[in-house]
Length: 116
Image (cartoon, rainbow, N blue to C red; front, top):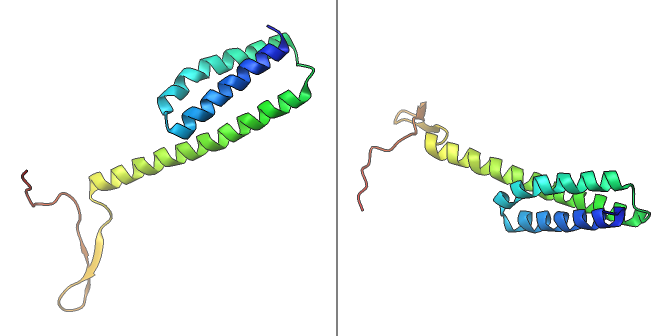
């Protein structure tokens, strides 16, 4: 495989990765890892393509994907935190009693039974 072919293969993989990130298909990202590694090895083994502009485009494409990947990771972490908060009942509620004293109301599982 020539350097240009390897660069084109990597460009296609980065485009697939971008599409998966934009559509939220995180499962597809796992399958692209090995293919990207193989394409990078081919690019390295075949030598640097003479078209430095193509390499710059690849670098820019990879940087854009990294930005999307970082945003996706922040989103997943945010969802994890929200789910944990929902499971634990959320933070305690601060309120006042009938005499005006500050008190903390516990949160957690409600004792109300709901039936469908």
